Image 1 (cartoon, rainbow over the protein chains, first blue to last red):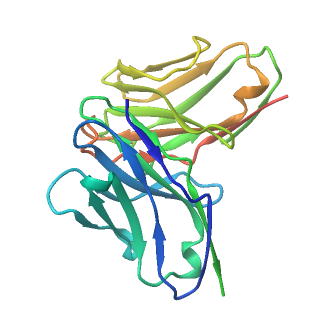
Image 2: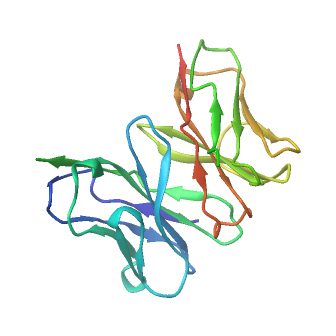
Length: 113
Length: 114
């Protein structure tokens, strides 16, 4: 069964600084990998996804993520954060023909002025 | 295009009661998935339906059940509610029913069990 670990529960970053959120997954084959963002009181919004091909994936809102098979990682990055990026971020993994996502525990991002 | 709609948005029940939550997917989407979100357990998969067939089910007791109608709308039911069932229940829909298709999440139903 697949699983996801997000080592950082909470990250505080200054506005304009760079952000990197870590995600490690466990799955035997090439997984489907996703990053979602959840603002308070909202559902989840997909930032980006990786299935195959180029290991550097571009998403919405200026986010990107890099798939590293050797490290079983799919870290999310943003060069310059905005106050509106304060939210909870979830990494998720899915398997072919499994029709479900397994989520990490999430990382809460606080942006300070 | 309207997003995923979940009703009701908030619900308060007492232990032992049952509850039904509703999810209307985006028009044209045939796959609906349900997730439970709690502070302690995080996001956990409940079940997924595609064209009225349940294709996968998470590790939840039989008190949790669901169904999907011919118009792709889905309901989930929880019987004999327990305090631990208090959670945000999220519904997601996708077009083709594979993980290759983006899942769009609704705002959730906040269930409180007293």
